[in-house]
Image (tube, rainbow, N blue to C red):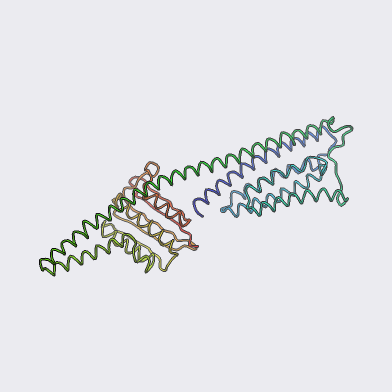
Length: 402
């Protein structure tokens, strides 16, 4: 699972738990209303008006337990959808025993339908909506045709608006309960969109900063290549020309050989041929050998065999290249371990050193770390950088192969 998916899972779980709290508060109010009605009317305590809300309230306990155990969005959606279905059946039975179409029971489906179409995938949301409509219609028409008995919640002696239990129940359940839950739901959804808007704004700003850094890095890379062409290749070719003019063919041959090797070295830095020809393992092995020769550090490398998708090989190689370059420039490390292996449907990698380390919370993220995150993000992977002053640095990444 990618970092974005983990964040979305945690955010969705957090929001659903808030809706559970709302359910418990509203059901608690409903249970209180039921007790008041039982105390002041002839309704029996065994009436579903009393015990169904308690069952519904208790049902939120196993639901929350299952909710916290899910480790994927799909599993979370399945548990949530199952809860909605059970909830709809309870509502349908409650409506049937509370007067059917004679009272406000139809609005009890409102929040179940709202939550289902907000949290679940489109098809699942429509299924829950259809189930709510079908269950209410079934209660109405089965009572109409006499298939199931009709129960009246109240038996007022006079007009309902002069019957206190009816008025109290309607005001608390239909007024206070409905509007308070509606207000909370709207505010919760508004909060979700506001957080998403802020995250998008932060993302856009980060991309703008990265774009500026990339332009700067591009110019720096052009300057570096120009210096190498001028200082190494250009001067060597000039010396070879002078050697040829002086008739010193042996010196000219040596200088031309250095020029060819310099051109090959520059080409390897830009895009290693081994990566295209032989794959990730040989290309990284060559990268490690050159790093070890340049730094004199002891490197232990575990590399995989075989080929991987081209974009996976490119991303993994660039991350390892940048990690080793950061060690060369900043870490002053003596020991480096590099591990790259296939784990099921993923390619995982790790680069660990015993160098200076740094404090990630206080060190601004430079182009190197930003580039590694961008490469891994392009292949829908995840990357973690762990470090502390004096304790070295560990870079780990995980890339899906599908």
